[in-house]
Amino acid sequence: MENDESGSARFEMRAPKSWLARVDDWRRQQPELPPRAEAIRRLVDKGLGHDQSEKEG
Image (tube, rainbow, N blue to C red; front, top):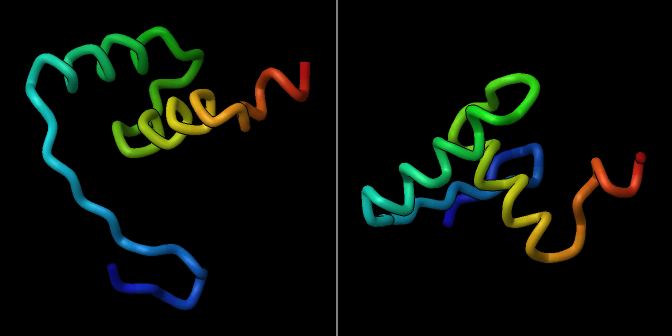
């Protein structure tokens, strides 16, 4: 993984098309359609218990 100045790291993964379709279905249900990468970040945060929308509400 390579780091940039913002402290983020590039990460790539492969996933089955059926899994990506589920991610795409979820992101279409969001108030603003997030890019796929942002949708995956949000879902991972939810899974890790770091969901910002739940804390703000």
